[in-house]
Image 1: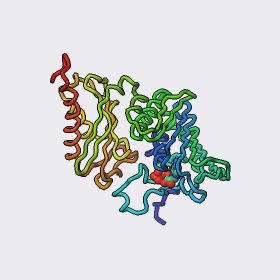
Image 2: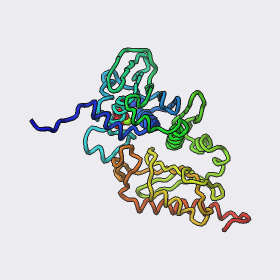
Image 3: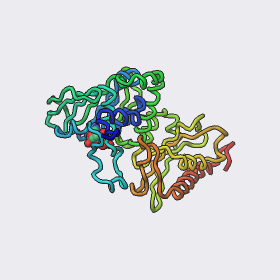
Image 4: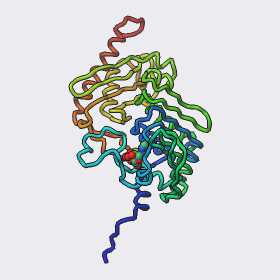
Length: 339
Ligand code: ADP
Ligand code: MG
């Protein structure tokens, strides 16, 4: 007998959890992405103690059918792709089928879901990867995922958690960006009973910017609208006189996904070149749309980083278009501003 064995599902899930679920905000991200993929127009996030006690995400999306409930928590189980070639045209936020098994491996999960409006749903309780119960229950259409006692069975990871304030900071940062990525979805975020974010879901991105940064910033935003053969650009960028001390105010959304991309961030900053004082940064909520075949999102487990096949073209378009918007603004003669 050889020495090599295939790990059982339970251990495999714990290993994957180490990669996908780094901290409470990772759980929020995975659950909210599932709610968005389910076509929800309302997503409510409730958090207690920085997410370490409770993370609850309630949506009004498609729900999960009875036969799929337990399967959804299997590793590599997804309704979003069916074959390898689908990987080259991802239109959903999820596709790896790793989030639910990973979360359930390191927490206690209650999932209540209903896929029709007849008031009939089901409830699945799963703890540390083991199903505790599965039964019918009354529920309205949508899914309600409650994740309790995150990392209760992985003490090393739990010890590594920062303060409640830091963990909450990561959660709210993610939610602010999601709300700006999806202005048609009404988001709420509550922490220990306090409402930290509430958006209307009426599609007005400027109103979302106001909910996140306040009305002064929202009023100082200029609209961006452009397209070329491959890309569309939309969203808002701040006037050069409205600056911040760090880059955190820059949100880049690609086909509904919030991403980090050095080249695009740089293009944004280059557009502001000489207009901003040194070490000051703009507020930006830039939406980039493109054919999903032009981008590889299967680069990073959390899918934050992506690869564009026509990056140079995108960089040029962003820089040119943002510069034109800013120039349009600066041309209006105002004392003390370059024209
Ligand atoms: P992925 O999102 O990559 O498919 P997940 O583990 O996050 O993998 O979810 C597994 C499956 O469970 C999804 O493909 C989807 O079919 C279902 N699912 C999860 N969350 C929801 C939700 N909030 N509403 C509807 N279906 C959901
Ligand atoms: Mg998912």
